[in-house]
Image (cartoon, rainbow, N blue to C red; front, top):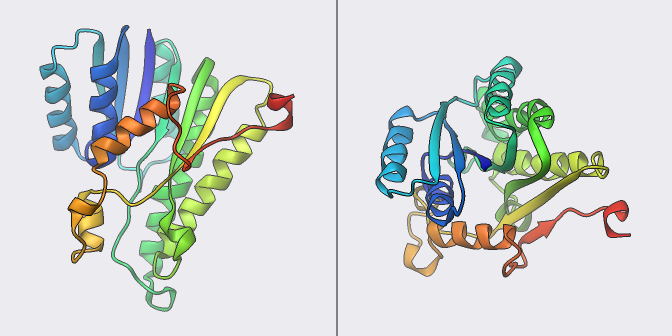
Length: 239
């Protein structure tokens, strides 16, 4: 039995991760799907159930990360513990608004984006540590683009850099556990968010988020590892 948590599960890459793992399941798997869009979560639930993959049990956990507090993540942690503990966590949820220079960035929007893209991941990881099983995999979905061309990415770019540091810190603090942490520095891929940000770009020139999900799952299962897949290893783990 496995318990898998995916944040930002209702659309785009998160949805593809959920469907890919549901199709690939070879044993009983509880897919815990977190997103703020209840209607989209319901559609994803129906699609997973429609696969007639009887090994998979989807569980919906509606949550708006922009307003979530530590107590909400404690409730999630308890729910995962009740399922038997969590084996795999995908930190995928993110919000990317219109490109804006720092000089014109709205202060309230800055706080909301830092909360959604970074602080919520801190709350989540802190709450989940007691719920992680003896062997667990934690993957942070990151973005190559703000590092290459940081202008106008604003709070999103800052939060993704912070998430990279956060996951590295948690990994370094738990080298005594059989937990494996990964950074997935994804290249551009086809999605509705990408199309809104780059309306003149031909989406056919980019890999689809379904392909990215397949590559992510293959890398996690020790298959082909793209150069953007970074296992976080410390001296204690490599000795």
